[in-house]
Length: 613
Image (cartoon, rainbow, N blue to C red; front, side):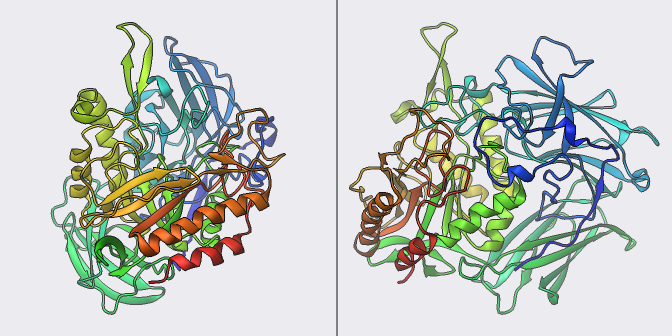
């Protein structure tokens, strides 16, 4: 089990007063939220697969102002907001709804260590929803669009010598009035739709790197059949002549092998007697990389990790099934929305983020389908380390069309047949496909991710087979579900249907693709005192009012899954869902994670029958 190298965290030199912050009251909260303060909020290193020693966390209290887009940059701010929680959340300390015509402003000051003056300073945002513009010391630095991918700016030329630095961020968010990828956010939170998320929602931080050259990204591709791993160390700078990267692979403290490669070039490294990664044995190799110039001077040092695993489909008993490391393995997991009553998109702490993964594994699931949301890098690190397979959805965008030529708009969720392309062209589709590429690039190295899902249930779906082919071209090492449920198309590696009836529908089997139930179950059980909405919104596809009835009906549906696996060629099933979310009470846990609705030991013993031959 991998342990991250101890990082030296350099804190901002401004005192933070606890009395300036209090979470918004009136909603249920998790136990982790009770421990959140401006001094301890999300201090973990945010990028576990590319770590450095020299970094500065600037989460904490920032000034904020929520103004009209027509207003200029504010001189005075309205109060304090706790970064990285979105403005709508209780843990932000604000709890205001940002409308599409609003602009959210952030401001704070920070000081840099003295020995950073000769370094190149990078300002990193792990995620901001949705469109951001950044100023340093009054100078415009740059902008970014996209709610789920990290972005960075070199701010070296904007810094003042021996002085405090000022950062200002402006955020626009069209919310559910726009076509952008946003998952299940909606201004109207009825039904299956949840509270919108606007602004900074992941860690903001700085790092010092060598001004000549530094490693900006790694691409790591394991090859189980050839007992090797391919690594491409990519530099942030375009000038790489003479730069070399020395790579060392470790099993704990023991050196496994070494290699050297010119920067930006691929090297294939043989791994003798490789230890394979799986849910039963989530073994991770450690990596250390040193970048040197043509004179042998060290320019950069980073650490990373990888897992040796292979995901594939192959025939078994006349139908295609999924294989892990060349052995058939049934995938059984939960539909995981990744929402929190106190932080919305943002878990209150890293411990909370890890808890959901650990509890899912304790219940005997070997997979999580991350549903229309992309998580912080640390969530995937926990899945890698704990050992759970991940099906990763692309957050859904919606097609927004004018109604009767007027100003009113409607969302078009499913476009069928030959017409599906006509509503998504130009800027909208280019942005969606850019963010889809970013998702794959950013999380390519996580061994836990085994399947990409570009579309869910026709939501914003278009050019399905072209998009599925693009995903496969970008990452041939993983499987692709072209669309999960509803508007199915004859492409991808897996045929995926959804069934929420008491009698679970069996997907048709094929000699060409694997067949799965991408969603089923959804049995509701509202637990008093642990509900987001105490009114009439609470619902499940079937709803019961005791743990006993819930378990009885879960067993009834689960037995149908066992039968499909044994006799009808089913390769996987996804139960809805990990936790309650707002009005949905069909979770295995309550939204505040304080009640486990069915005994974990009972579920684990029950689920174990799925994993044998």
